Amino acid sequence: MAYDFIFKIVMVGDQSVGKSNLLLRYTKNEFDQFSKVTLGVEFASKFLKIEADQQYVKAQIWDTAGQERFRSVTGAYYRNAIGALLVYDITNRNSFESIPKWMKELKEHADPNIVMILVGNKSDLKEQREVKHEEGLKFSEKHQIAFIETSALNAGNVDIAFKNLIHEIYKISK
Ligand code: GDP
Ligand code: MG
Image 1 (cartoon, rainbow, N blue to C red):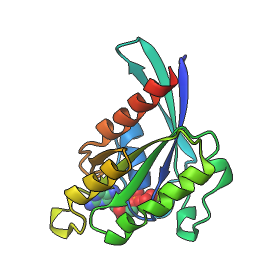
Image 2: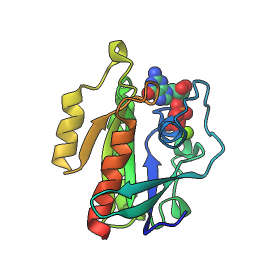
Image 3: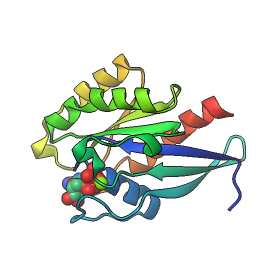
Image 4: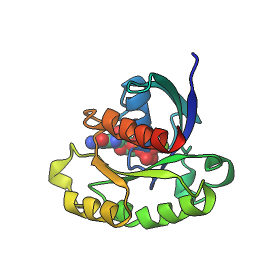
């Protein structure tokens, strides 16, 4: 398919926060309850039309193959990335506390103008929530990035999260 823009987007965040399932939900509208470290893809692509300008964007979204467990996600993964989803799990405070570390990684290895969105995933697990919505919001405001809570399981806000990021990247790229 022809496109006007191609954006490389990376998913970062601790292991098990739901990165692979967010990608699976967005690109294939599927969910994998038993997904372990990798779903076997390096990246998945999705085409998007920017209605206002009649322009086509190819979003190439990269997923880790479990390297985040060893904190060895570097080099090729971040190279030329112009967008990033910083993902934590709302039922896992440690994963939220890791976000500054992932932000630092991005700033060191990716494009200095990289556009980020903070994503609090597993919003369906309300009873197990450890990180308040306000906490995510406060962090995002402090760092002037977008914020959204999602559920890869019930698909809540998943499309909006990716679309919001892609539109922000488009604004600085056109
Ligand atoms: P990754 O290590 O960050 O890629 O996380 P995965 O996508 O492999 O997900 C880790 C585990 O969390 C798997 O058992 C998923 O089924 C589960 N999971 C992922 N997203 C959600 C979600 O939105 N809600 C719930 N309840 N479970 C999820
Ligand atoms: Mg994964």
